Length: 298
Image (cartoon, rainbow, N blue to C red):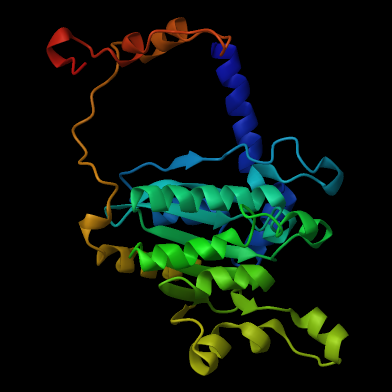
């Protein structure tokens, strides 16, 4: 069991690299934080991030170069003492482009937010749909378009949605932050448009840069698409913390947290209880047993 856990951890460390060290370096050279760095900065320092969907895309799209983690990081964390769902695009994986599995992973994050009435934060940095596979992204009821239906559904139910545009926000992906309650944008790196400068050039022959076409100044001072602009990633994330600090506690998941207890005297004993073969049964009472009968809640 210990060996299997070590193999899993090794696999996880590889997924955390996203598109690889070179792409991470190129990403940070633009003055941007990585998807995981943004989450780490955003959540409360005395809390932990419960990631889910970590291995989405595992072994998929190899002929396209792969899609580690489904091209995004999703999970639950505390921001300004409020529990919320966080979705952070990983722009080191195909510039954050959406593969079919990316849509599924984002939908799952939204479902968790809706089922538990948790605020959801989107840290957007995506080139939009991965065009060679766009025929597999849109058509089904449970595919990409469902995301915007969920945006509207959460809005009607009063579930807060906060978006930070921290990189490209192109085509279909541009709808998501604009349908949120708050749309924040980072100057110089954030941009929102249905078609980028190259497509504009090929379509109508006009030369325009990304900042003029859909940058922070354009959308905060002219179009009004975004609410506020910030000079860099940390200041934008700080603004999210201030927004979350004003959201009432009634938006939490419907339970009160109690003081945690260690499940058993020695956590490593769990390895002797869990079978290596996942198809074999085991006794959950042994897993949940408290350190003493006095503290047992079962």
